[in-house]
Length: 412
Image (tube, rainbow, N blue to C red):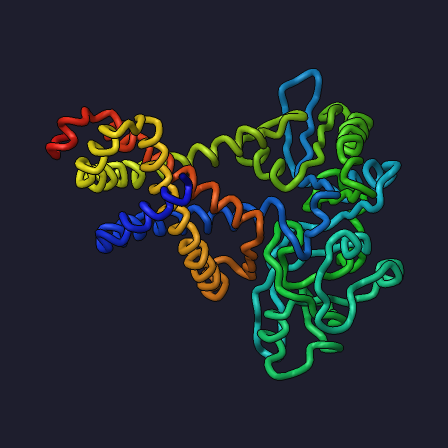
């Protein structure tokens, strides 16, 4: 039976090639947009490469400070002292890193000035993130302990600062400080890794950062295994409750949440507080927006499919006269539409790869690199199937209920 459905579907598609092509074009354009968005979201929330350990670490970029006696609230990036004193001693973790947010700095070279993004990191940062080292090495604990003025740059920055020259052992001037380049890493576009230059924390012009509860730091906490993350999240919240601020009369309550990448995005966008980051709500919003995006082209396809099925009213009448049930007809007509959408999905996947290549090369999103992996492929097939069902069920159900006499006469 299924084989007969496939043969019938193929003959129907080939009977009106232009009509089929229009259907395919509508399907492909819709699915290309959805697949590109899906690939970008998957790359952001569940990355591979430099943040390939993201299933084993949590992060925090903000601390919320309050006082029990008043309504004053301060939300700020973390200070180094807060991370060093209260988070780094956490038991049962593999590593805890304190890293600054990217800051714009001016790099001076023989009359040239380049505006680049710089982070200052500790040694644990390079253990948690898996940078691909193209040349040289990354800073280690000895560089931190001895306060060496060393720096790592990415490949694009190396080409920009030293065109045609080896970058290793070159010196750059930043804010009156001279750094020696000890390594070049691959360009990356991820929230915890995005920067042009990395230098040790100990290269700060002043040691004031060591005594600050509020600052420009984020933290990464790496677990030995993913199953440890719920406990680590609880430990982070418990550690925050022990924080003692410099002025307890101003703030005496601290709240910090260890988030996954999706949790962090959801919490920031939805302004959520507490253990619930709003990730489930965010996924529902994204799913709903995708369904709404599919709704308009699906409605257009409903009209196109209705017109195509109307041409087959005599065939439907004959089949009903020989005992075909409405359920059989609905299955066949919906299957035809789903098959067309799956074909459009495969074409859309190839087109989405082309669009992503263009995005990667255009520079619209710096250092973007996206892989179309099996997860995106599976989501693409699911979207194509849902699209086929949305646009095929209504016309199929309507035509399957035609009276055989009217259908044989070609009347809908």
